[in-house]
Image 1 (tube, one colour):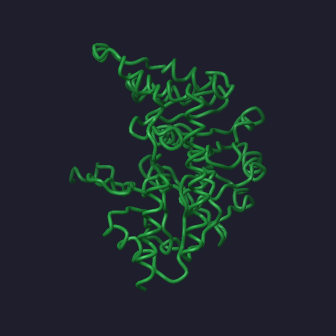
Image 2 (image 1 turned 45 degrees about the vertical axis):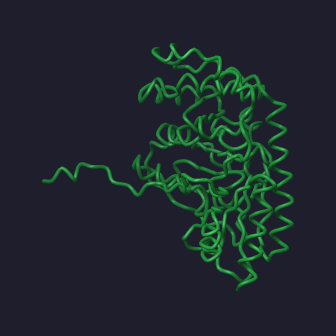
Length: 351
C-alpha cells in the first residue's frame, strides 16, 4: 500500500491572475480605489509590540461594529478570513449529511472545490439560457442549498421573492445566500433571518469596502446557526483573524460616508461601461455587481482576452462549457475603463 492512497486529492480553485507588474487589472473584481483613510490612520497608530500576543479569538470589536452597522445582534454575526474562509466554515459546519448539496452549474466555482475537499455530495442545477435561476429547480430533496445573489460570474441579481421561496421550501436544510456583491445592487436577504431558522448570509469586505488584501469576510444568521459556526471554528483554529485585520475591518465598517462614496463611483462607472460595451458590439445581462459578464457578437472571447493581455489589460476568461464566449470585466476607474474601450476598439477594428 502506498502512502499516496491516504492523501486527499482535489482539483483546486483557480483564482484570477495576479501580475506582479503595472497593468490595468480588471480580472479579479477588486475595488479600484483605496480603503477608507480611517483604515490607514488606525494602522499607523497600531503598536506593533502587541503582535507578540494572540488576537481576540471572538473578534469582538469587528463583530460589534458589523452588528451595529446592520442593526443586528452580535450573536447573529460571524467573521472570518475573507468570505472564502466563512463559506468554507459553512460547508464544513452545515453540510455533514449524506444528501447532495445543490447550487447552480454556473456560479462561484469554489463551491465545488469545498464540496470535494470535505467529501460533501453535491449536484449542480442548470441555469436558464439567459442565466436566470428557476426557483422550482430547488424544491427537491437535498442536504443544503447555496445561492450567490447577485451571481458570479453572470452578474445577475435575483429578486428577494425568489430567494425567499427557496429558503421557505427547504426548511429541512440550510440555505446559504452568498451576497459578496450585494452592495452594488439587488435585494439583500438579510430580513429573512427574522423569518426563517435555516438561512445563512455571507458577505465580504474585499469588493465594496476595498479590503481584499486584508481578507475579511462575515456572515449573518440566526443565533443558533452562528453558534454552530463558532463551535467548528474554535475546533479548527481559534485565532483565525490577525490584529491588524481586526482593527482595519472595524474602521472600514465605521466609515459609512467613504464606503458609500466609492461604491457609488463604481456603480456610476459600471453604468457608463454598459453603454460603451454595447456600442462596441457586446451583449450581456444587466449586471448588479462590480463587473460585467459580456459576449461579443463577432469576436471570440479567447481572442479578445489574449489581445487585451498583450496590451497589459487583464480581464477574466473562463474556458468552460456554456460560458467560454464570455469575458468577465471588473469595473476599474474611469481612466482604466477608457483605456480598455480604446484598446477594444482597436482590436475589434482588425477583425
